[in-house]
Length: 475
Image (cartoon, rainbow, N blue to C red; front, side, top):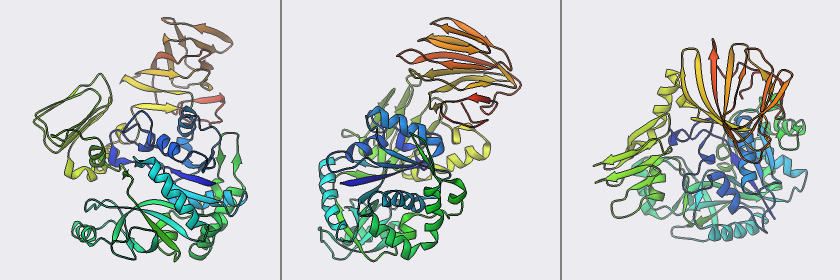
């Protein structure tokens, strides 16, 4: 059995405006109905795989739980990092967690936001890698390159043209275009997919040799974790003592027992809009379209709309990317999509919410989107999942009007509890202790109108919360 260890953090700024810090790319259905995280879980399920371990941040834990539930992945272990520290501390935490169960267990460490089209070939290669890993090696998958890609790291093979498992000579960081062309034509280099297969024992030996200072604080973070039925919260005090460093830099680039297996099963990291276009472009004109879009005399371009209320029409475009959400639009030359983070940096400096917060704000009970806002008022569309409940709370600076659009709402206002059905409404005065619940079996949708001197999401006093969030936490 192989235990998947999935890394589920990051912000995915190069896929802005769709991917944002509050809802990064691994949770997005970029190529189909399932998210990248869900498709990663699916290809690491089956008779050869144990239940996965997920490493994620506190803000993403409920999204992880919801998306796992949607595909019937019910017994995973979710390790919640107090703060992002890159991949080396996260992987070490998973390895120490597994050591207590079986130190000879084999783990596959993988990003949760990559696309692999040929799952059968991938699983076959992973099974091959497991056998090699049990002999004491750390195995990595190298992707057969088809272009001089400068956005990836590369792996150097031992032998030119050899396509079987072999010792790995070294790592090459993101190269210049000239170097990438040379490596592509030399036949001795593969792309680094960041996927590793090894035993827990061998990986911990590598940490003890190459990053021993990291082990005591991560051991304490795991040992002193706060365990709930859904999540394992790693201890923040211990975690804060660890530096942020990648697994490659801390361990893999120094390890001497690495084996690489070339892989040619349709891999993409979907790291920017160019790679999304490459995976979805169709026809002689090379145009990729998603959602409410239409192309007129366009060529080699990507058009994408995330809302039916916004039609995207391309006219005479060539080598362009146009992506529209309900609150932002990106128009970029395909050759410059690696620079999209500059747009995010600009918006962040400006204080615009579009820099990091998605238009639809996901919460453990459902979510909401802001429809309109102005001086002293704000209008939201709120969706509450069946059986879900918001916290019992009050506000110091605003009052609210709720209008039920569909479903049934159970509303608590101080000592008054009532059921509201479609087209019914209620007023929540400033300072009233209130709660919203969905007692039904279908999503409940309502329109909320807020009025007051301050309308921020942190204006909340929480008295009772089934999700164990603290005072001032959003939602």
